Amino acid sequence: MIETDICIIGAGPVGLFAVFEAGLLKLKCHLVDYLPIPGGQCAEIYPKKPIYDIPGHPSVLAGDLIHNLMEQIKPFHPTFSLGERAESIEKQDDGSFIVHTSLGTIIKAPILCLAAGLGCFEPRKPELDNLSKYEQNGLDYIVREPETLRGKKVVIAGGGDSALDWALNLVDIVSELTLVHRSGEFRAAPDSVEKAYSLANAGKIRIITNSNISELHGENALETVTISSKTGESELVQCDFFLPLFGLSPKLGPIADWGLGIEKNAVKVNTRDYSTDVPGIYAIGDINEYEGKLKLILCGFHEAALMAHSAYKRLNPDKRLVMKYTTVTGITPMGT
Image (cartoon, rainbow, N blue to C red; front, top):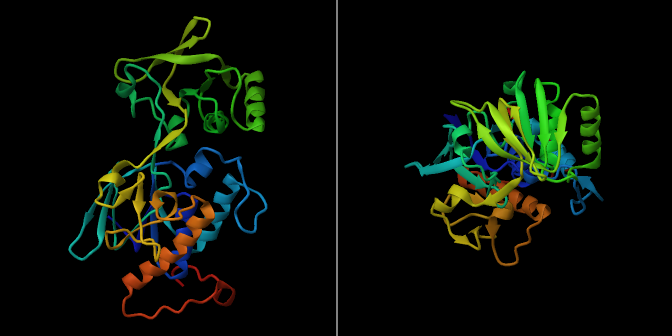
C-alpha cells in the first residue's frame, strides 16, 4: 500500500502544479493517471501545440510546459502510478481514503484531489470483431514499457502525433515496424513526418497509407494482421504487437460513481477552496464546474493553490498557516 498526504487523480498540468503548491506546504503527493506519461492531453495529444495564455510565456509548446512543470516539482519527489486508472475509493473510519487502481495498486491518503481534466481518457478503438481477444495479449492502446517490445514485429495504426512519435521512438527497439494510416496525409508535426519518411527511405520502417487494419489473427496471441487498402487490395503482415493509436476520448469514468455532486458531466465544487460535497475530496481544473467557470490551465493553477492550502488546514487543524512568498522562503526540497 502506498501512503501519502494527497492522492491526485490526474497528472496533467493542473495536477502537476498541485504537487508544487502542496510541496511548499510539506505535503507529499502521489499521482494516478491512465496515460503512460505525465502531462495529460498536453503530452499525449498535442505536445507540439503552442499555448499562448500561460503567464510569463508569450508562447510555450504544450510538451515544453509539461517538461518545465516536472522540473518545478522535482524537489518535492512526487510518486506516480501511470498507465493505471483509479477505479474505486473507500472512505475509512479515520476519514482517509483508499484508492484502488485498474492494475491493483492501492493508495491510502487523507486527501483526494481530482485533477482529471475532462475525465478519464479512453482510447478510440478500431471496429474489429475480435479486438477484445488480443487486448493485453499482443494489442494495447498505449506503450506502457517500450523494452517489452524489443525485438518484436510491431504494427502501429494512426496518423497523429502519438502514432508518429511512437514510431520514431520504437524504431531502434523493435525488429520490424509498420506504420499504417487510413489517409494519404499525416496530421502529426511536419518534422516528425519528415523523419518517419526518411527512416522509410532508409528501409528502417515501412509506411502504408490509404489503408486500414481490417483483421487480426492468432490462436492464443496475436500473430498476423490483415492490411486492406482503399483500392481493395489486402496483405497479411506478421505482427507480434499491434498499437492502434487513434487518439483518446474523454469520459468521466468511475468518478461518476463516487457519490459526488455532478453537473454538466463535471464535479460541483465550493469556490472557496474547490472542495466537493464529500469532505476531504477536492476537484480542480477542467473536471470541476461552478458559476463563471473558465476551462483554462491558468485557472486550474489558481484552483490548485487554494486546494493545497485548504488541504493543509484540514490535515493540521491546530496549526496556524502563515502564507509566505517563495521570493522570501525559496524552495525547500522535501525531507530537508
